[in-house]
Image 1 (cartoon, rainbow, N blue to C red):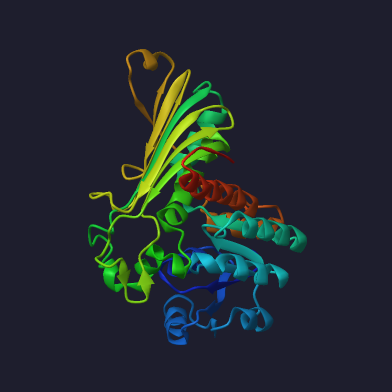
Image 2: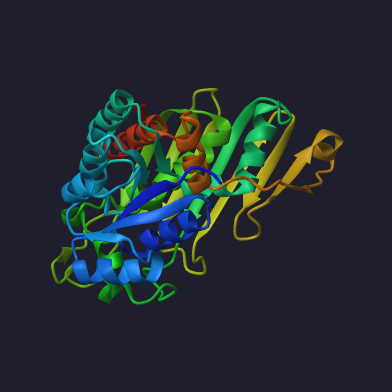
Length: 351
């Protein structure tokens, strides 16, 4: 049997449940502790997802008292940096939800702390789990598409105009995502971070960005209880990649008809590929070779790939860095910061 790895889950919302379920499926992994500021919620979470786990309401106390090897941080965005830094200082391995931080300066501190601790550190860009994206990256890096020249990527949700995931007006799980007072950086920080990684993972780093951010009228008065509704809910980005390719990337919470849709198209001088995760998570459509002259698209099936939870545990066991790590999270965080700068300045910004 593999060596037992004991994991603590910090944050017991919907994504916390996802982390617990995924870790529980991995042989030799046990959810040994659970932490949430709401003790009742934490105990209910432990009963449901991790029977026998120690329950805490304070992360510092958890790190002092719990017998754990790793921490999975699944909290609102503004807590990612301080809690990760605490865990790293205590010598624990860390899997942190995205975005890595709420600004690049904090993200850089997290990278430095992880390096100093010698700990495995990963950021949950969960769509890396899609075999289709891994296959797309392989095709691009093999040169099959030639020189990459044009990229289109989108991440579309519709929970503002619809009740596809319930009534957001009555649920703090969604309301905090609309409020900068509660640590949100809007749709850009919440899911724009995903589509930026999704697009640049196969193509390469982003060199410059021009962004337009907007907050539409979600409710009369722009407030719901303690939540001022001021965080951006739509974002458009024109980007240039380090290899010279141009791209258009956009995301919104207003895309009626789309519950949670990610799509990517990459065009090169010798061919093209496209991914639509609504259609399939393990299929890539390609137009390559003689097919570019018709044009004809064919479907390529991607092989299964390990999830980020499996890769995190494998990295702990091997002692070798996992991917995507905090350095990658900081790279994407810098792009996010430049998007805000660009929107304020009304011009493109160098990353």
